[in-house]
Image 1 (cartoon, helix red, strand yellow):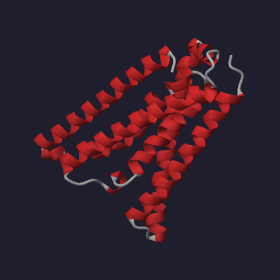
Image 2: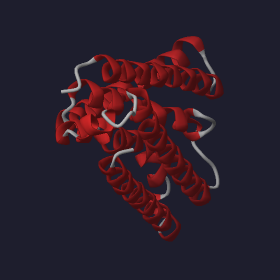
Image 3: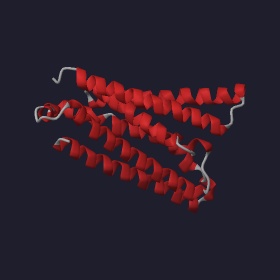
Length: 207
């Protein structure tokens, strides 16, 4: 990693720590005021938006904007080796944050809504980070990538909700089945988006 990537990684770690602290505040409020019970779970839908905007979108575009990617590529570092550790660290950080947040929600409610059980919240995190990374590689502009990631994740969430409701209404799918199918789809899309980001990084002009 370049010095800028390391610095940005530290900033992302602080940001995700603040997200966990924020959810700790939500669950504390729930414990103190039972009338708002469930707010921590209902706000979970916004977490993938945070992941896409603040973890994925700036991942590569910051280096493109400052030109530090060119320095890294001239130090016998291939583009794939430049990309891989950044994506992995962002994904691990996002998954860890998601795990802590779902743990806090379970501690508050002593149960989890079906959309927060199993692998589904983690695959949505991977999808959001991958989408942000894809737009980061395509646009090479942080603000454009952040906006694209935000609206992209939000649109996919709305589409998923509509498909989920239709599958329940017309086919009678159980929540567990819906969650497994949705997790598989989001994980597959995440892999495709990372592959797309890799292609743009490795095949486009370094300028």
